[in-house]
Length: 344
Image (cartoon, rainbow, N blue to C red; front, side, top):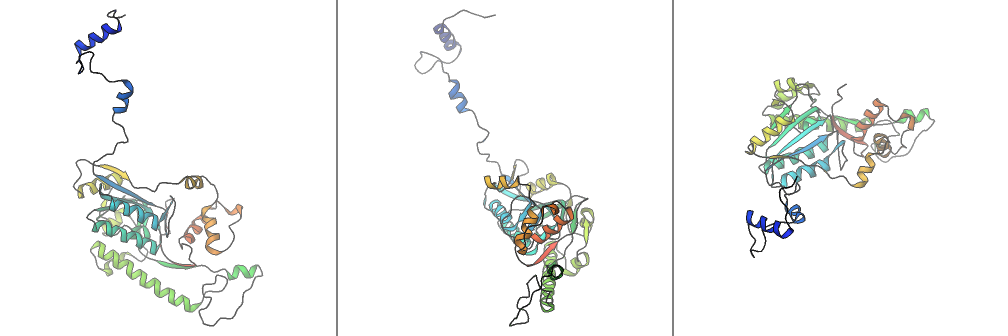
């Protein structure tokens, strides 16, 4: 069961003869187990290979900072800016799964993508199930757009949204009145009927926004505004149909988009993928565990009304409507680039 009987000193002499003697010649070169473990390569050592940065834009596009589940303009811009300023990231893949949302928020994200390209880094978009309206807005300037054949995309168009509740209040026996110094004073009071003069102003804003939208798409896709208008006006296309109409470049998934980004950055031989994400604070992780309806609470903040009764929470259609209202970002009126489309 054993090979030899020897004392500790005899074992040391044997190892010295079979191994390498130390500098003093009194023992053999060796390392203790604690020192050995401390010298092992650790998994958390920095990986110096060039990187492909992946930024995920999933959910409704809204203004400001938002937690996971919504595409906050400021939050997403910060992630994209980090990818732009990180010298180890050589290209960016924007993973889009969004029906759109606030038009101004979408434009903020699109401009940041232009800045990444201006820094010499290619941007490739990978579309998920839905990348329509505002979701297409933030995608259009990419060097290359990938979509699945079944992706819901397009819906190039915007609309205005302003909610009033005078009829509801009247049913409750609540009436409002007042004296104003100008025809449009109090025009955005949700307790009053919509002012026709304001309607004219808002209509002109929407028309101007639509022309800007198709103009930007035309410039990004190498077409004329008239050509884009012919396939826009809110029309929804599958990924395959969008490719036929020049709205996307190639059909494929996220891995194909990453490989394409690596090839464009000339790092296809050896690179690693890094998801550029916002680190959740302890409070944010706790908030995600709460079961209350975020949309209902947002409506209360948005309208000045109390949150909905508990028995209304969880209604799917109501939740979708309230999520759309949340796109106004706290404003009583908003210009929205949103696709009323979803996978069932």
